Length: 149
Image (cartoon, rainbow, N blue to C red; front, side, top):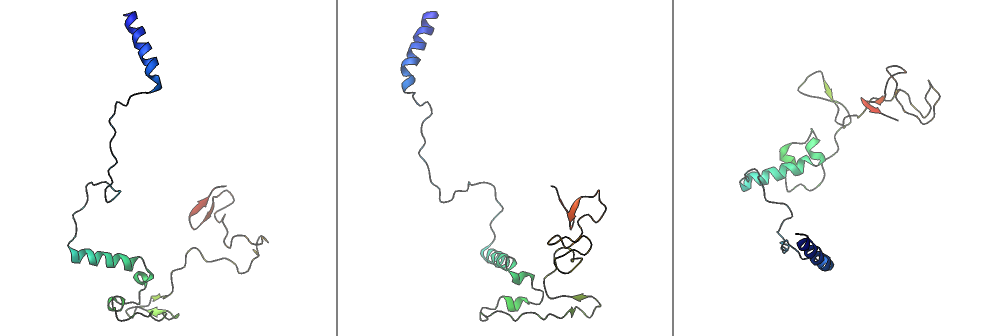
């Protein structure tokens, strides 16, 4: 048994310079797509696929969010010029009491003061809203998002 081990060690020491590959090499196969074929939803009929892609393009542009645009004006191929800007005055919808502004919705809370200097603290160039609104032991937050230092 010991002689067999010595022979095996001698053989591996000699062949350590070049190790034979035990795994056969596979030639790289290039598919037309780098994605693997797997489970997917069934394909839509061509007319529904075209409608889906058209709606996706509209949703990814400002036209999808413009409440004054009508579907007929969005898809008219003869009109290549931009639509006029919506009026800056509030517009009532369905004769209701609620007014809808035609400009985009404001993000964040309105500033508590005008100018560059905070009148309460005298801070120059600081935040326009009080971040410690709920007390000195509170989180430093703006619009519900907490900042950790």
